Image (cartoon, rainbow, N blue to C red; front, side, top):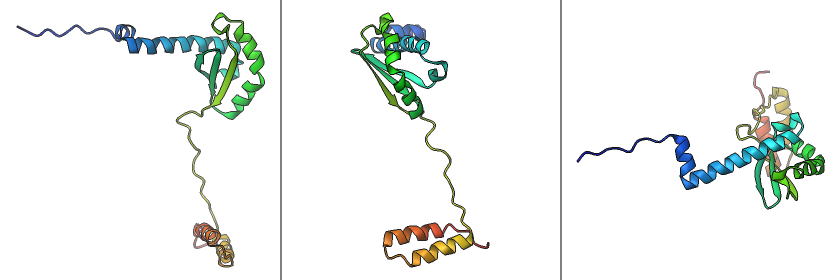
Length: 151
């Protein structure tokens, strides 16, 4: 008796037939459709900064990439809600929540370096010598140690 492997099925077929995967694909397609409807109502500049995160029980959760866009959307929230309620998909929209979530790859800017002249470092060290608070003194001494030598 020989073993015959099952024929490979295309990934699209697997995604549509496997129940957990099908539910995920359906949810993704639904969010994509809702995002498209939202984009039609947003100003062109805001579209790339605002994403639909969820839509359930009359509450639409929007994720924006910084506080600036969150503020702008909050000022326009009532108008946006009225426009979306006119669409069949958002007919029972009762609330829009706006949350800020910065992009994942954009954590912090480059670390700043302190460039102190030898004279500035010496001045900070003299100030540290006159400080009685040990924590403040240690902080000033760390700062003074960053001074350039040989100025």
